[in-house]
Figure (spheres, helix red, strand yellow):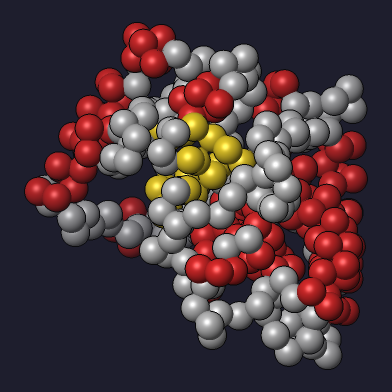
Length: 303
């Protein structure tokens, strides 16, 4: 995918209607097929109710703050997007103070459109851990999304496992001084009803390694020991240039920052093409953690 074949200044072709076309030849808009559909009407009513649920009064009652706007508070002097650091990075492991893998203790809170949160869901499912680590999909908190992620498609507009109305409630329970964005994915301790890890850089690795005892015997090894150094190095390159490159273009606030992110992103895609010229997957014949990380970005960023 050569950068030369991409033109960032290319505009969509005009779909001009000839002046010779008479009015009677213009297409007539047909009635919508689902007009008057009771299910659609019910969904619309539910959405209206959702908009009235996530109020300032409710947020104050449960102790959460308005969601910071990343295009205002995560922009440097050049207009480039600088993502906030992850708030909860306590690792899973065997050392004192490390989080311990446990069945039915943790839940992944994720958003459909979030590349980061799709990764641990894909890895969990590939490893057959659906009955070990639960998942809950979040939504916007009403029409304005003033309070960030919420549970607008759940009964009562709250998390059925914990009773929380907003994802940020888990952050506040873990750290009452937290002021940033509550992000996805967030790994929540369902028993304690608090966030324990939102380190999307390492979360899939914890699922792959620390939750190995809960995986079926035929589960794939997505993070094999003999390749871990190479996988880590590759992932460290992949994140800023490809994974986050997409967001650097989307959230930046200056033409200079956009051009820089654009050039970097497409040059990096050329490098990925080279890696896959002779390999089925990035590290040979078998899927690894790196393939999952690359896939979630490529599936959404390319036409």
